[in-house]
Image 1: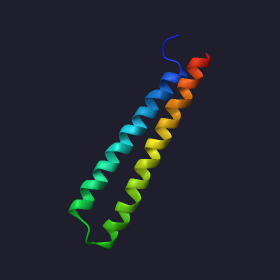
Image 2 (image 1 turned 90 degrees about the horizontal axis):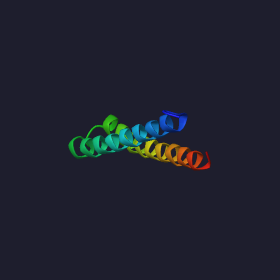
Image 3 (image 1 turned 30 degrees about the horizontal axis):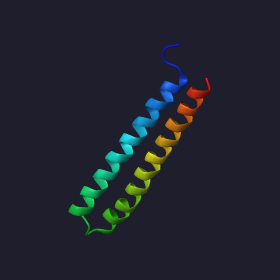
Image 4 (image 1 turned 180 degrees about the vertical axis):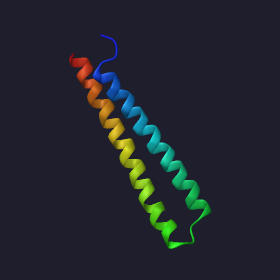
Length: 72
């Protein structure tokens, strides 16, 4: 069938996971470098939460599209 909606979903899931991992890495690095100002602390609290949310959503999307493909 070529590129179906499942393939697109899997690609989006992979992008979400990659973006989440990258954000988590950035958060860890900035935590090591800047932990003085209040603004930075608030940003560093938000970024890991966002990163883990992205990884979670990405893995959910991939799981559902793989289930749909096996039904197909």
